[in-house]
Length: 100
Ligand SMILES: [Zn+2]
Image (cartoon, rainbow, N blue to C red; front, side, top):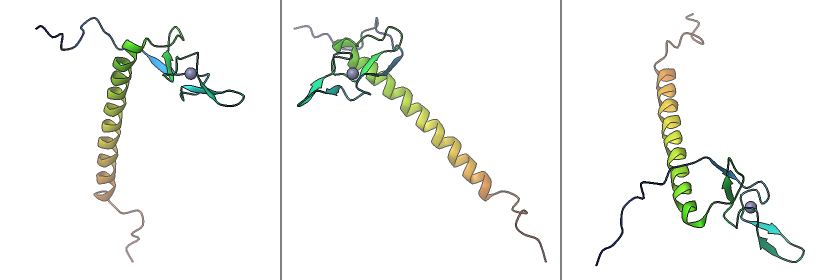
């Protein structure tokens, strides 16, 4: 039996944005109950360029790619922040030492 496994090489990460209709919640408030948002098919995300819902097949891939980008940004921020704090600790420290 042949299993299709591994990444689909034709897939590319594309810009996605939070659905503006449901604010990324995937549901909109109906009169009596919440309904699946029709602008994003309940995904909470749309294609940033076309504004259309992501295809459910593609949505998982796009969200994963998006999450990866966010994680990289967070890691980068944490690195720079730590660096910054270390610099402060090791700084010249002359500002509030008036040396009496
Ligand atoms: Zn929506």
